[in-house]
Amino acid sequence: MHVTESLLHALKAHGAQEIFGIPGDFALDFFKVIEDSGILPLYTLSHEPSVGFAADAAARLNCGLGVAAVTYGAGALNMVNPVAAAYAEKSPVAVISGAPGEQEEHSGLLLHHQAKTIDSQSLIFKEVTCDQVKLDHAERAAGDIARVLKNCRQNSRPVYIELPRDQVFKPSQPVSNLPLPQPDPDALAACVEEVCNRLDTAKAPVLMVGVEIRRYRLEQKVAELAQKLALPVVTSFMGRGLLASAGAPLLGTYMGIAGTPDITRRVEDSDALLLLGVILSDTNFGVSKKQIDLRKTVQAVDGQVSLGFHVYPGIPLDALVDGLLNCVSSRQPKSGIKPAVSYPRGLQADDHTVTPTDIARGVNDLMLDHGRMPIAADTGDCLFTALEIENTEFVAPGYYATMGFGVPAGLGIQATSGQRPLILVGDGAFQMTGWELGNCSRYGWDPIVLVFNNSSWEMLRAFQPQSGFNDLSEWRFAELADALGGEGRCVTTRRELKQALDAAARQRGRFQLIDIRIPRGVLSDTLTRFVAGLKKRRRKQSR
Ligand code: S1T
Ligand code: MG
Image (tube, rainbow, N blue to C red; front, side, top):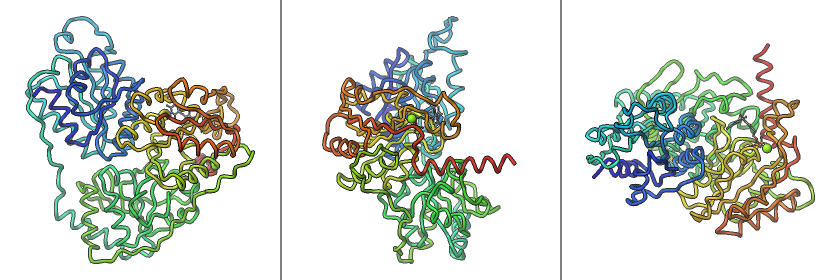
């Protein structure tokens, strides 16, 4: 077996189901082995940011490992932003970059694709990955790959693997799956006991779940725990879509001042807020109505648990959840907690112009008639509108907030799961990576794409209405669809939207793009409240 085969088998053994990539001369042999070996299917896209976003979304959806394969320099450095997004949002993506071989490194010439030094690229990726390796010694490759992939899974963060092209066919041992570290049993028992006591003595305990419960494949166990503890459950903003099919007593998503008042009150007044796998980001807590004193919460994230001023290091989330389940094993699951959110339905088929909330209404009707679909959302008002859509499997850059994620992420969903995705994307974000739809026909992907077309960077206008640079020109996206191999419809009224959604749902085999014209300045209810909340917060802070 050679290094590349060892690497491909190891990626698969650690949860990879496919590879997204764009080759280059420093990676041609590597890509040829991918293609010839068939160990993992290869999907090439058109621009490396999309490769990173698709790999990230595939990892989030299948709770496995995403793989993004690129060439050295121009390819890999093109992908820094999506890998940063994956790092920030704890998505386990393996970045594999081709690289110059030893002889060319020491040729005395500056190499094409080289920035500052030969190692500049790996230094840059050091900042957005949790572990890195350069496979320049084949005899060490198996051990290095095992360590890096173990760290990728354990930390649920991206890793960087550099494969010099003179190493691709060097003989190598097979890669073993290293065991994940186990917690000290006494520390775990003490932690579980303290958390159980905190919850049992609380008057209004609430459970908030975040992205880690999916990354560590704990949704079903957490749902069972919530039922046995009779805890009302909310997701964080980033955790939208969690527990969608787990039968948990889910109230909805916590959005502070921008969310459902009943959820906000329960979370902010709770005397025992249990945060399982929640990233303490501004988008999750930045718009709290009442400042939550995080010291009074129980936080289990990044492999440690803190209660007030007690910190238990080295307690993986899965060990804590298993410990808590043992604690309550004799209790009967209690149900009866009703969702606090009723989602808008019943899109009126009339001649009114379309608002983002109308789109949510139309999608809720669509999923009622045709079944739930996984959703990929981009940054912009489409992301806030998604909070008005029924809870379903959902991937979005809810914290890192990069544009360009939506379309490639939707393609990543269909590649890894075979499910037809619904993609929500603004016109500005579509201009960045929407063109990847041109790759659908090659792979038989047929997403339904809703473009929130307000000819504007509307989210920025909401913060700074006086700027003219947020005005975009009119792009007629529906007319482009056919040229890219799909079907496009342009809608300006609610009646046209309803008809277009129904037609798109019935049409399989080609992507369906609905170019939804929204008047400038018309925002979703959720984004309106979010902007008001943030502005109020910033006024308070500036006093
Ligand atoms: N570039 C990238 C890659 N990501 C970003 N998030 C931004 C710039 C800044 C930015 C936003 S929201 C936004 C920009 C430019 C406008 C989005 O426009 P569009 O996709 O049309 O959606 P909508 O009109 O619904 O706003 C965030 C706040 O930083
Ligand atoms: Mg826009």
